[in-house]
Length: 307
Image (tube, rainbow, N blue to C red; front, side, top):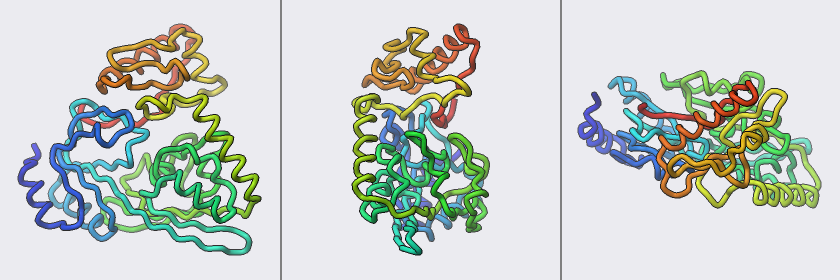
């Protein structure tokens, strides 16, 4: 059992720059606005202390959890044991080379901001990300995508630190990108920064595409209610949201959780949902879809915490 009080005081004495909190409600750090407390929550914005905290957790045999900005995350009502670490590195560097734009971005840079920076430099290829609310780190880990494009199409390399404190850089192919997944779902490592490579484009075409994507998102998605984006993965040979809709589940509620009336692929928080409400609704949706179509649908969101 972790002695939270001792670890909290010890960390506060050793790490002056990190934002260290005890029993921090994860509802403050997820777009679902639900989730119990993290024993110790650390938001850190420099690489040196990040490496030192990794070493501290290893030496003291403390469970370590890595989170981004929580836009694809559901934390259980019991919360997260050990140290929950939110890397917030926001370095941005831009280089033009042979009619291409190379952008180096820290893991904590919002992917929306990155898409706008690309536009400012007449670089095309990130228009799809203008409505994605996550960070660069999350986008790499989950191979974020929208409107027929994915982050894997533009990544040149990624630098990460493993839980032993070793820093490594991998090429695009070494990411092992697949649909909504990458090698970072399988290894104990924290993304530090990524280099993306974009060709020059036509500024008017870039702007028009971004406007189209924002308009489409606003029209089709329930952005007025807390959610974690699309709740379920795309199916092989079927549209998951369509199956959920054909089960008559739009508007179906368990507690404060609801299948969006605007888009059946989204589970939303009506304002008073618990994580259990959301998990129970996800389970019910899966069961109903299987019953009607004999198809297994899988959550796209990441679920963490004590059960």
